[in-house]
Image 1 (cartoon, rainbow over the protein chains, first blue to last red):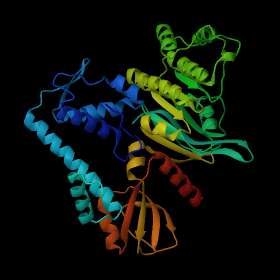
Image 2: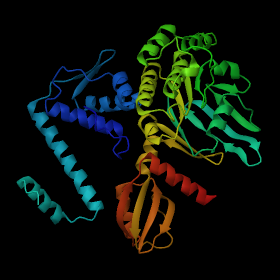
Image 3: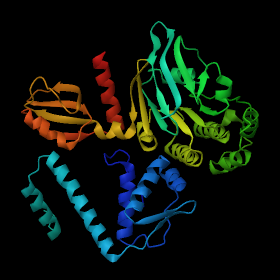
Image 4: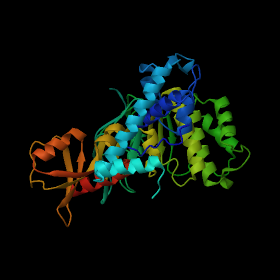
Length: 126
Length: 297
């Protein structure tokens, strides 16, 4: 699930992990009651600082997506369809913002970007 | 904040051309501290000073709240050390090396040591002289971890090892840190590995500690800007301008620290226009900081 976590990205690792889990919950890949990997497991697997995993889980806990029980681990909470929909929209907006900022740094005008999106959506590869 | 390692104005002259100069470093308790620097910048010498293997000319060293070198023995009992080079008798087998090592450490965790030999696929009957580089690296890490130290001092523990072995070793380290909440000082040239696991960074150059800061700060505030039309001198800038390079055209390249997007307004009010903001990863940042510090010398 975490193949795309990239320590070199300017987005902090904890935020990348939280974002990936948010998508997994929103898309139903992770279901209510499912356990998240333990901090030890995920830190060992990704060779990252355990504090990074804790920070990612804490963020999701604050958002009401998971609950952490001392000694038992973190579990996905039952999230309403409404909230899942909202989370998908938030993620979509985040993706667009990321694209916009990359485009801005390359000096691509908004009109060109909009045209490119339209073309992609129509499936025109030219 | 309390520190697992704290040095004050440490000086150590080893040769005419090489010395550790005025080194004040602070490794917070429970930090995983990446110790960076080019070859010959003094990382290994500093580590030897911290362990009491070298005596400073002047200055103060406290490790785990104790004075070094005066209380070195008590300090070393709580440190797991992986030296840069193999320090084991080559005629011993893996199992013998483990028994030999365990005799020095009352905290040695034998069941766990045995479990790690299985996890790392180390054959306890093989002599050290025939181990591959990767197996040697695994064994050294195993020995350091099995004594259940409060502080791990790792001098290039994975340099020269293949990616699979590096993963094994660093995965084990991350698990140990989770279980034990130990402090780690780790030096390496493999900057991308440190970028994953470290939450603090110290950068050495020419025997001096030229920067020390939390990884997050190091990474988020450090940017390369492409700017045009900026006045020759800037006053009251909200960021720190480390390097300013004029190219051939109108665009200048700046290296800044403490940058946030809202600071674009400041540039515009100074009559400059911001062409591009380039994110720097740890390796870029490392190279740029070295250039900046050398320029300042």
